[in-house]
Amino acid sequence: MFITIKYFGQIAEITKQNEESMEFSGRLVSELLDILYSKYDALKSKDFQVAQNQELVFDNTEITGSEIALLPPFAGG
Amino acid sequence: MNNKKPKSVFKEGAINSEFIGNSIYKHQTKTSIGAHNIFLGQVRADVIDGKTVSAIEYTAYEDMANSKFYEIRESAFEKFDLTCMHIYHSLGKVSTGEICLFVFVSSPRRKVVFEALEYIVEAIKADVPVFGKEIFEDETHQWKQNT
Image (cartoon, rainbow over all chains, first blue to last red; front, side, top):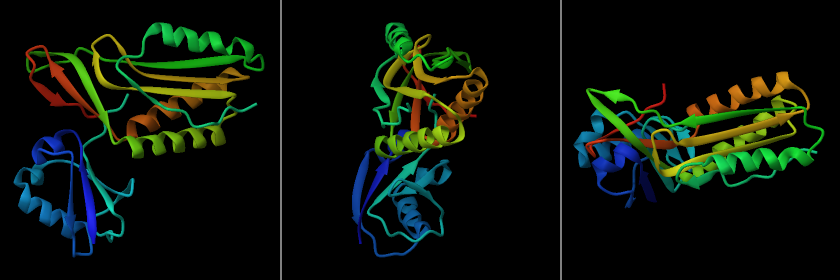
């Protein structure tokens, strides 16, 4: 499955890009995170949530959507 | 008459006092309103490890943020007897002392607007994917986190 991953705030500082697309053959959010951790070592120590098609999901959520986002802590207001 | 249409929430840069004043003025024609309540979020010059914050640069996951603002809006209208409600949030750089969030609720009665405003502001802080880079006077930065 072809997915796009969006990065924000301090997460984008680590990945040095705001988004990237990749072919993902795994099933769960946790499997995608493992791929990203091996690509961006500094991500492991960062606090973030994952959204799939603009809804927050968990590590054991199945990846079904094409738009994934890594969201650092919110700071609105 | 409820004004429930989704509106654009984000504004580039600070929200100025003329804009806020005009928003109040525009409600003079809505004479079923008996009470307004307004929250203004202002960028604070926090001092962290001896360095002073001079501005916050806001970014957002805009599509998700807009749908969250919409959900907050719908749920506030469901919970409270509001006549109207407006939310504006800055994107980009806002200097200390300037306004970055403007929430404006109106109702026939006062008790409603006190409760509604707190509900809305807390929901914005907790649920909307907005990110804030706190820029210090020496141009270094750190990332803000709502508590």
